[in-house]
Amino acid sequence: MDHVPVCGPEGPIRAVSTPPGPSPAVRAVLFDFSGTLFQIATYADRIRTALGRPVDEAEMDLLLGGLEAGLSDPAVVEAQRARDVSARAHRHAFTTWYASVPELAAVAEVLYEQLRSPEHWVPYADTGATLARLADGGLALGVVSDVGWGLRATFAHHGLDRFFSSWVHPYEHHSEKPDPLLFRHACRELGVGPSEALMVGDHPAKDGGAAGAGLRAYVLPAGASPGSWRGLHAVVRLAVPGPG
Figure 1 (cartoon, one colour):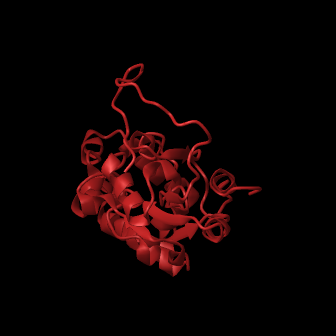
Figure 2: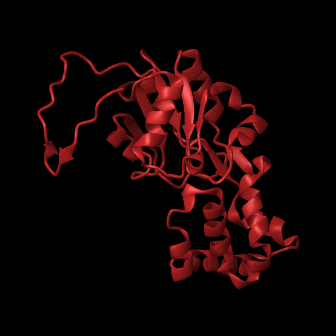
């Protein structure tokens, strides 16, 4: 296991010698799930499905505005604390947010179950090709994602589970990213050291925090629409020797 030095504000507290030559080759890539490889259907589509009736644009604008406002509701903010450390906490966090909009309170559980339903998730347009290229390049792949349920079924529904050899769901470890133990556990399962792994995600603190466990990290910009191109070709360039 690679040793990660304890750092003060300016750098390592104890002197660290770095061997000459290039950094170790990447032998494994860890991926976040939502916002990295997949995105769920739009809130507008999910709300219409959950309500089971037509919703015009004016009403939808009010509902979406209610969800936006709910993010700063004190009860919602409190419910988000440590939401990923257990399945129960995750469900509570999301249903509390949905129910902060009075018109959605009755379907808060329905909206949450959509999260757990593989058919509501859409791989980005370049997800499959990227995973295939990495696997063909001999890299081991794993998932490290803060969710409240197991992700294998969603990947299997889209024919993508075959690429992965490690699944780390932080709620199963009573923790959440960026806890170093999660990234190191995935590395152990894949048989690589942290310095030989690359973490890819869309959250600077949670996914970029893998650097604190000794991994390299690549953080994608947020906001990609479901089914769009995500820019994952950059991961191939980082991880696979030669042209990507």
